[in-house]
Amino acid sequence: MIKNRLQKQRGVALLAALILMLAVVLILTNIFYRHQIDVSQASASLHGDQALLIAISGEGWAGELLSDKNDNRNIDDYGEIWAQAMPLLPVEGGTLKGCISDLQGKINLNSFVSYRGASLNNELNNFGTMGVAKAWLNLMDMLQIPASPDRVASIVDWVDVDSTIINSWGAEQPDYEGLTFPRMVANDFISDASELAAIKSYSVQEVQMLSPWMTALPGSTPININTASDQLILALGGENGQQFLDLIKQMRPISDINAFYQELEAYFLIPLIDVQKRWPSTLVSVKSDYFQLYLEVTLGEARIQVKSIMDRQGRTKPVIIAREVTVVPASLPDKEELSAAEQLFAKKSGDEEPNEQLMQQSNIVQPACVAMGLTGEIT
Image: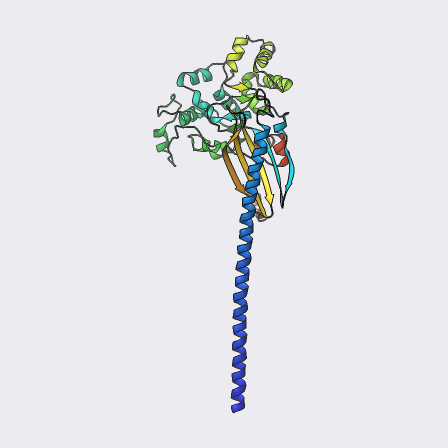
């Protein structure tokens, strides 16, 4: 009986020892696992910081290309050195690539600030005038977006400093208070082009469709006809859009705006003074001051994308006035397959295909950036 009791005690002791050993193993495993997570997080954080520093050095490269030392300030086109893609640069543990886009090849939403009631009405009602408002409506019409005077008047009232509607089509604070989602009118410059979605009568879908052709820059800026897209040139040409586009393509790169006016005079048989009134130097230009730099840095498991707006107005070398940093996940989950019901009801409207194709063809930062896969806006 004593022998059986001793055997039982030994069994209990052995079991207790095994349980204790298991507990120790679990604790050590947990400590090791947490340590590995801490090391991984520290490594990712370090790589992220290093990647950002590398991207900032890329901004220095872009600044040199756009400085007076390396670029002719009197003309900007996609044949210049700054428009070529940065070669894929190997850095310790990763790579850096980037490109530069001309932001003045788009419609600057803040250019609407120059309108007053009389000037806006005159432009919209006069067949022989052209301005950013009329070009904007022409562009919307090409994209099959409803285009009416209230679409431009609401932008003017959003960016101007007063609280008085510009005309009967305008919209100030009282018009926003009754909306489903009320908001305050900025009465100041638009800081980002996506802000257009907050302006009365514009939907998020419309803003997404317009995004390849618009930007938000400090103050009013002309459109660089050397870098503007075909769609925007057609919009600027108005009823003579195709001829206007053909002439610009034939003349590019255009080095002098006055020579361009003379060509328009001979091409359209319009007096020079009327040409200058129709496409004034406040509307079109052959040079730019605002550019967007696209950079992508891969370092270890860290991958970041940086979009920086560069301003060289009145300077010998551009400065960074805005920067957006996006951390790209190391891996994305696989896209879930649609169910049979979802496939059945998936949108396949033939009426929308032309617009989608137009977006795919036109959502282009510039050739170098497209070739590198660095598209998107920013602004």
